[in-house]
Image (spheres, rainbow, N blue to C red):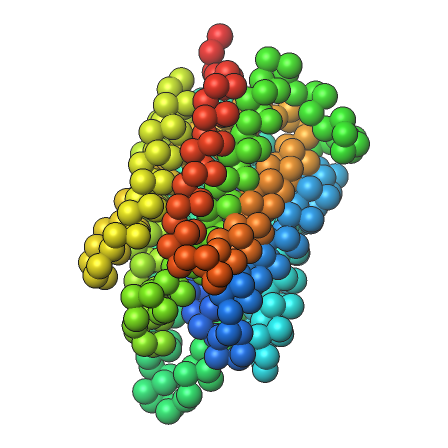
Length: 409
């Protein structure tokens, strides 16, 4: 039975984990497009303050990903995921009661701690369940599910905003509170679903000290692994800066109203997440072959050209097209990058080293909004769409030069 699971990227354990994550990301998608607008309505008046919402989340996720990833090696992936989803659901509901943007910042930071429990453990569980040659497709199943939640969540969130504002005559700020109740409920349901469906098996291992974590990695692939950490940093940088910057760019530069911006942002993120999910299906299949370096390189170059092209957008249709291309090409390379890491990481350190990978992505996601929104506020509103692609391409060059293919015999 174990061998069948290892060779099957579509086994029930993989599907169950993916559904639990999809429920959570659906709830996240309900409120995330409106989070910058909610914070602004509660007093955040600078792009840098909006950026702190992402930075606080990612800083907390970064600081907790490595230790919680190590903990999952000891207590089992299921326990980490169930507890993380439960706390996430409770914290999300508490957003409803925020009276100042600093309350939003605090709660968003606590959410980052729960992400440190959920994501490294989820990735490590995939590595436990599926062996080399099938991991790319298994990772794509997880990512497609997460992306589908993010794609349809904003649509439901837009419906909630419209319904409650028109039928209950709520102010814009009060209408922004409603999605958090529904999002929190989905988080709690995800925790219950994970508790019922996921296996509680764990990997017996001793905790490896921080400075010795890489010692067990095959020396042939050490440079590849270090380079992949840079790739995760640049990916996190691009991810962290893009959503808050885009919302402000639509509102302040393209000149749409608050509610128009909310709708455009929701549609943008839904289209982006949907295209990302669909392309991850293709990316997952490509990730189980030996051409992963080229898949990663070509997809990243196209995605960063699309990011830069936002500077030349003059209407919403053009914006939607650029966003679809950007997210779709990101979806093509993510399974390849993750599956290479999964093939390199020793089995008894999957939680710990997955936490390290998530940590580097989190560092990028924490720094990206601060750097890009500082430049947005004080230098040029278009600078984030130049800075992020430059950093990504530099890291890609380092990765490409140091790449060794683990699947080569």
